[in-house]
Amino acid sequence: MGALNYMVFFAITAGIYAILCLGLNIQWGYTGLFNIGIAGFYAVGAYTSALLSGPPPGPLDWRTFGGFQLPFPAGLLGAILISGIIAAFIGFLTLRLKEDYLAIATIGIAEVIRLILKNESWLTNSVWGMKHIPPPLHHPIQRGISGFISSHPDLSFWIRGLISNAYNWFYLAMILAILGTLYWVSERSIRSPWGRVLRAIREDETVVAAAGKNVFQFKMQSFILGAMIMGMAGSLYAHYAKFIDANSFEPLYGTFLIWVMLIAGGSGNSKGAILGAFVIWGIWAGTDFITGYLALSATRVASLRVIAIAVLLELVLLLRPQGLLGEEKVVSKMMGK
Image (cartoon, rainbow, N blue to C red; front, side, top):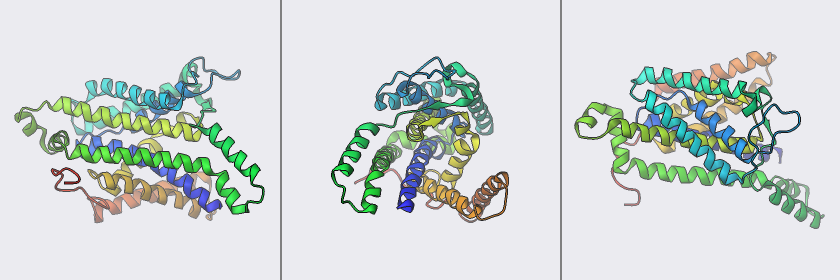
């Protein structure tokens, strides 16, 4: 039962990372936008949703803003909207930059966002973080579970344990439904004229401009859409974890791992983005079990896990640079035809 519960937790976390990968795939895999500021949009989505749907500031909080206790859909939509607005502002300033310069600008902006979230205590409660973020439909589901268990006292131990964990099954189903919807939309988009323009911009934007397309406008659309998906992932993470602080969005977890997942799975391929998220997170979680048997300090164990992922990335780049699945060469045909 403990293993089953852990697998549900694993799948939820990997699903959130897969959503982040789909957002990055639109920006980098389809359009070639070198965004290393993923953690910034991830954090903005999480904090926006927490401020809109979370409880008012407590007596020991530094925070004086937020806590509107709006329903989860309002928090989710707010996270998507605010992430898109910030992406539009950042995109207007940075999308005319080329490759490495865009990467430097986006990672710098992401760090600025993280430091603002860390230090503006009136808004984010600083390093003490935001607590008691309500999971969607948690109370009615838990009441139903408690009522069912109390009315069936003869249930076996394993069935009781399975039913007690029903809320996590609900959250997993919600994550998978959102992930499936985003995958379907992403596949339809890349097979549309809009998606083919994005791929052409990635290959040679000068040719696209010569064909009469507004390259900057298409880049902006791709950047904003990817950032909105990242903000959505942040909202889903915040409501599942029920606690967030600035350390939750360090570049290692909020940017580096997502890039490794996309590259390992296959940049430019939605299936690859999802597969890479589950495979890399599985390796990351697996190394946690393995290093638990080593007589090393926590700092050395953490460093060893990063080295393991880095070595894996090098092997993928050397042996299979296109990723586990690789990009589809022909995407002009609509799905189902």
